[in-house]
Length: 442
Ligand code: TYD
Ligand code: MG
Image (tube, rainbow, N blue to C red):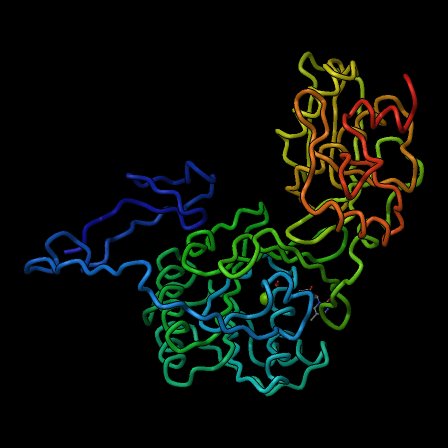
């Protein structure tokens, strides 16, 4: 007998013991659906005495050899951690219209040209639509297409035919039983489990496309993130498309690659720093360039700050694209160590273009941007900044300083202000010193 496990929101995966009209977690209406436990895991459902647990000594486990091949696109290989891994499963998540189908269709074509077999499961669009897109991006492909939405049928095909690359567009169109409803959490989870299992044993590379909601929560796909080996997010920033490795069992997480959506498909952007700085206002107070590192990639980005007299008793701190708590710390350091009066000011800080950065090395750029905004003095045009700021106002070293320096030079910012080190012998030790270097005594 199936036992009820309560109710699960089909949008965000939140659970509730009772049925409700609106999800208490994400606020979606009518999204709670009763969930039943599969018969075999129900207590007593199996009968008989339990099997003995088998274990293996870790040292005796055979080395699994990673077999990789290039995706055919150097930008994509970077974010994949060196290419596709045979027998692995990845999720590419992104908002509708961001370019997931286009990117994967191109990658599918690369695989075909390299002599690999490709199956494209096009559940969202008719084969004719896929063909139209293929023509638009200039492909005349030998890949196999199907509109199947039953994951068991697809899984059986993977086991029998073992195509090298399988693209499912999208996982939200699949179910595991005839008449099942695609897109529910159960369908998502069960279809994913089936396909991942089949792809692993057949040695296919499986790529699932997943939609995320406009709010950016990975909604449905969140529940399958732990089943796949890697999760990539496709986002837009400064008019470009950024693929970010959220999780990757076979490569560094946080890695990014940058593309541009052109009239004939996605094109790798080889000089993203220039692209992200293209619209930077010249000589504007509050605009500062940071030599950031996302994943293993040095990137020059513009940090912007604005300070204005606050009408509120508790002034606002509005942060976009950066860790808001880190920015709070930087503001506190500016107030206490530099005596910058911020208590009556609303402060806005963002990364121009809408890219998100997680690099603590952005602290100095944030501090300089805020200082520049408050004092209404622009920072020198050709300087880039890097460094983590400690509570005493000291500048702390950051990873890969040499590579950041190289990128800054390459992208037209030959002067780097950052923590003093072997790579940066004329660097500074404190935030105070950095400000003194830029603008002299206050
Ligand atoms: P698409 O790959 O269908 O997005 P997703 O699968 O993430 O929903 O791409 C959607 C948009 O991209 C669509 O508005 C049309 C545009 N586009 C281009 O600009 N150039 C192209 O070559 C293609 C194929 C699409
Ligand atoms: Mg699509």
